[in-house]
Length: 503
Image 1 (cartoon, rainbow, N blue to C red):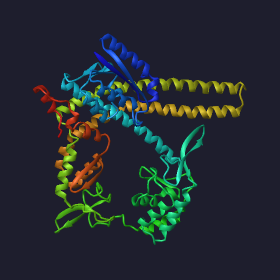
Image 2: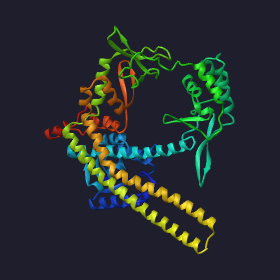
Image 3: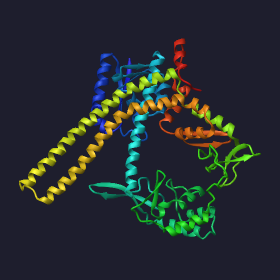
Image 4: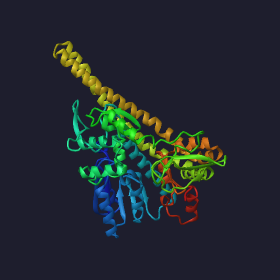
């Protein structure tokens, strides 16, 4: 039988710790030889887990579509094959037989639905692993922000540059001498109060100021520029303002003058009372906040503040809104029987997690011992007058700083070990009880639960479009959609299907 091999490493660390491409290829080729599978092609990806566009994965999919006689994919593990939900769906639509050699799993049209279900849970866990990598990246960017280094792509008027920070070169921003004077001119012009945003966009276009895509800057984009504190020397990161190390384009006084022209048009008026669901939604048409008011002294209606103009978005009664939020909460619900299956899958995935952290701690402990020996030896060398005091102090300072980072990393891995199952079970229990809790509570307590589950919602023509917080988005997208479940044929399959609440 004809087959293809897919191998992938998602980070440099994995490549160093036994997950390398050569070791995967050896395992898979040995498996193919043992089972009399003819390997017609190998596809290999080596990249970071969040890097866009796995070229060889996409080439593999195209190859399989064109070569219908090849029906088998050989891969090491679930998280080697899938990076996200889209990958899962793409492979599933090809009606292939997937051999996950290290996990001892063979998945195809004849696989049991329970087996497919557990496989789906593993895909969720693989996605969660990638999200954790993303979280570590965000931590690094937060550290840069706290040091006054702009942690992202440079805004218009600035450019990204490399700056030296100790022995490393870190990306920061510096003034773009060609564009910065025109950005300042835009602030100067708007501060007079005599120009509209529409007229200012025309001026920007005439001055050849373009956005990052090389297109004309629109009104909304220009509005964001004129409201951005980055231009007077501070930048906002994760909702907090940080003083930057770069040279500002404008003064704080000029920035404040522009804000006075805008006035308070984007701040909703103070209400005589607090409404339960305000702060949870924005208008799907203009992005303004959703506010509420009482009609006929008893009916609460929610609607757009309309600060950017009237776009025809509809009003919605609080009772109707409560029902719509109930459906959103229901999407993450897990039934009692299903809860045990998912917990077992979580326990199974924890084995790999434990092994990963164990190996990391082993490597770091070796590094810690080496640094401790170095510190001891350099102290002896100083006593024996083999090195100068200045050299001793410099080497000691460097190694103690390195030792501190190593010990912090060890602690992080040890805490991750302890928290993995606890956090996972807490999340599963919340998903199991969230819907029933919501139905039992008043609007104020419902809102608190919604703030826990959702980061935001947009309201458009009486329809709510939710944005779930992590990891509840995994359950909303994964466990509550029919295309995430295996196709069911028999009565036994239907029993498994009934374990999961989906639409």
